Length: 335
Image 1 (cartoon, rainbow, N blue to C red):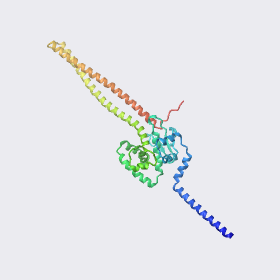
Image 2: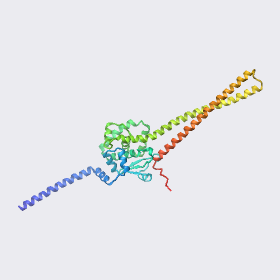
Image 3: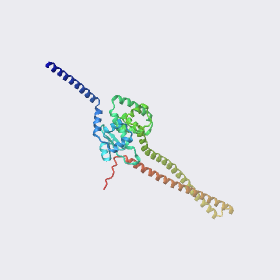
Image 4: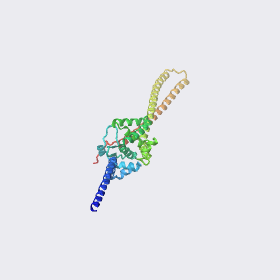
């Protein structure tokens, strides 16, 4: 009886051990299959977002999933010195606003109020890089096909083509990865299938699109103004040049004709007083016309100089904007 009870307890022990072993195998398998999720969860637990970082996630309208991956990447908003240490510029002529090193997201702290929204768009762009890194091979194949279909629609856009050419030089082999981030944060109208993909990471993707359009318009408006001014300056400059040539020629001819008139008068070459007065009146009228032409030219020169000053102001504004997003231009130390 005692032995039977002992055997029964022993059998129960083995059964419990088998169950525990199976549970351990299942847990181990789940951990292997979901290693990145576990790492991300641990990373978010260890990370306390600043109010500035939390505000960026909110303004970019990241979904819970998007915010989770964003925080898992432990984003940092950095001033120039620290940012330049964490994000390496690969082309000196091209400023960078953020980077994702495979583990963390870094965003340059652009403080120019005219460029409100630029940090949010940069952060969302880098968050999508972190998303892309976490995709399975099958997911990447599907998404790559979707972004390539959008690329075909955009490739004739000169600015877009130039930008992708820069990525080709600085991030070789990462075209679809970059397209995934660029399209997701900057292109308003895309296929429903690709929109559904981004829906996993943004509550309303149009929020970040609007922020991009807002600060991008500052650059494009200045460029448009500069282009219009250049056209006006060129046209007005040509007009001044042609009018000045005509004026100078007219003055030279009038001087010759006045000299001829004076010599003729001195030689009593006019048959009558009427002939003299008529010839003199013609010269006076021509002189008046030339004076009017000169006044017009002077007025055009004043307008030309005003346009040139305006263009200079736009150049200063443009330079200020470009300097504000260039992390290599550190602020002068205070004394």
